[in-house]
Image (cartoon, rainbow, N blue to C red; front, side, top):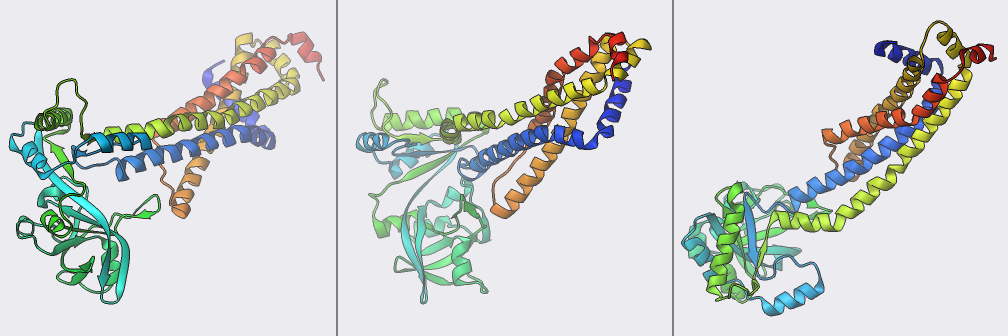
Length: 406
């Protein structure tokens, strides 16, 4: 029996019993759809996390006092041992760069912003050096960013997020208008492109002022971080080593002393995410995959029923010259095609559910093509595996006994 002939017979058998075939497919459909929906949400979350949280900028990393904190004990120990980052550290990093393309400093606090009688609370205020925009992920939407002149003159100029503009100037041009940040008048020189929300939290409630102005108002004893850009993606590791050597030299650390500062990279942030959610993701996919096994068992049971019902057909085919391997191939192809059809429907259903969920509940979703192909291969493999016993049972039927069957 040719393979195409086996497929034709399988499709004929499936279409001859439409309701039974659909009920058989239901287990695989539900199983595949469940797994794909879970995978879509996990992949969407991972991609969302990488783009919204772990992205520090082009070939960038951050130097700060504490680094990545994963526990209260870490915080207490590092806060006691580590030294504050200073502007002198920034100058040292930029002094003899080999793999460092640029470096910028920033600090911040939470303030209130007022325009007329309107007040916005809990606005993130950032004091920055003028070149941070070249490294940061923030983009200018209107006007311009803080310039060197504003920084050198301790100018009371600000660059604001879109939420501040939407609240204070919904139908007006905000450039050149004056707002009060923590009670002090600042002139708006630019507006950032809208960032949106991250896990439901708005990211456009911020204002940026020159770091020199920030230190003039609040003093320079607060926290300071330095964002560093490497010359290329291949040189990020070398740039980190260069910065580490520079800071260790400034702090007179011995070769066996631990760093008394922190370095945060995108890979490190993603590593924390993987450490926290990686095992949960694997367990979740494993649990939902049980539905596929149930679907495979359903296929095996239905195929056994099909073999019993078609005993006479099998006897006729054998009496006309069909060999055992022909009968075996026929039923294996039928179970595989049946399961593959369920996989296709399940993937389509999962894709539709993911799109609806993304539109209605703003859930981050992503379905890489590799997972679609894997789902179809797994569903076909389940049909093949669970179809072996019914196919073997059909192949070993004695033709004489099969012809006598009612």
